Image (cartoon, rainbow, N blue to C red; front, side, top):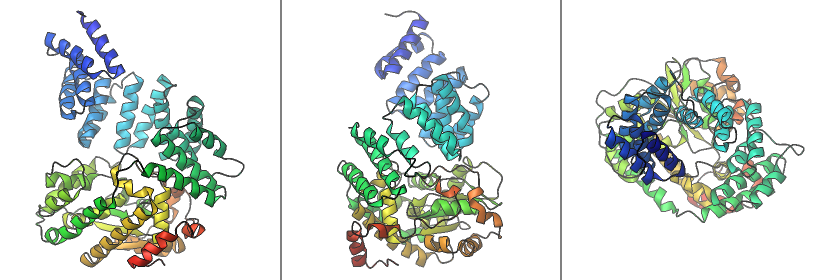
Length: 525
């Protein structure tokens, strides 16, 4: 038996590093039995609890550790735990306090960077990721976080150098290969096709193969080999799709719940609904939502708050459902009859922690908020809603070509062309409902029209949002605000038309999709 306190702390730390949570907790419990005010005991006990999935218990113990000894390591981990339960304001405050005496270890600095990134403050995250890499240069995770943040901040050359260094250290790192492939336009003279092919051939793990497969599909497309690129993409997506228990009926049930809940939602009370006027940019993913967000946030009166989870969380909160997902039929149905004013106030409170400047207006660019359009309109009567539309065939192809959050079940539809087509058909039907139910609140912007007439569509967009004209909106590509979406590289260029009618390069492969839309009565022009 280890009797000394230093010995127990060392044993607990060693067990935690091995992932032995039971031993960690046992040693931490001994520390607390001897002294209930032992900060290290509370910290280690809390980390063990949270690592086992008991987040609230972890917060209590780590919070107690901070109260007893407000050191940087404890605060960094507390901030992380607070974001896991969506207490973003408390997490931000904890980070501010941690900055007074930043922790000295690499893990804590990386943790602080991750929390800042989760809060959308990539500029604040960068120095912490850089310090973590300095302290532990052989840690691939820390290097990836640094490279991704440099990319979000538009520092492409530095991001590329960081990724090349990471791949030299870990040649099979799939995330690094995937990010590098999309960082800049490849050329026949300068690409990574052979390197990616070797990495894929040596990889057997499913998620890594998916990342490498998508990376390997990106580069042939860029160097003029679209057919080969799509073949590789089809193989990668099909391999991953076979591992998923996905059935479109799951998504259909969600669309059904939204449509069926609208009459009840339309009549729900909206007590003291806020007068603030955020701008929601919605639509199917990969249809120009980031482009429109950049145009709007280039206006001197508008800030981009990024992709917030504030509306889904506000709806979930008022619904009071215990279901494991934020968005599901039960939650939509339960929330439809609640007071909309409360949702609006909760939304704004959550959004406030993601704002960085004093602009009077802000954008919330979560494409999937099209599910919540009814809640937005009722909970925030002054809000403006902009929905991006794109040719249905290009929408299907762009969703198929993009790799969304692999662990998120919301994007399981995106690995099969006909699944995406079925999803689009229900999206199209839902937008028809909102168009009829919410005249004047919603504007639909066609991606193709924006490409063809940037100034005309921008004027229409600003007028809908109640904004005066600003020439800065035409120079959106000079906006130096961070971009943390797959379109980060594209929106740093002036408007271009390379992606319009891309689907016509792959007519044969997409023929089943065309027939599906034809039978569904969806206009393809």
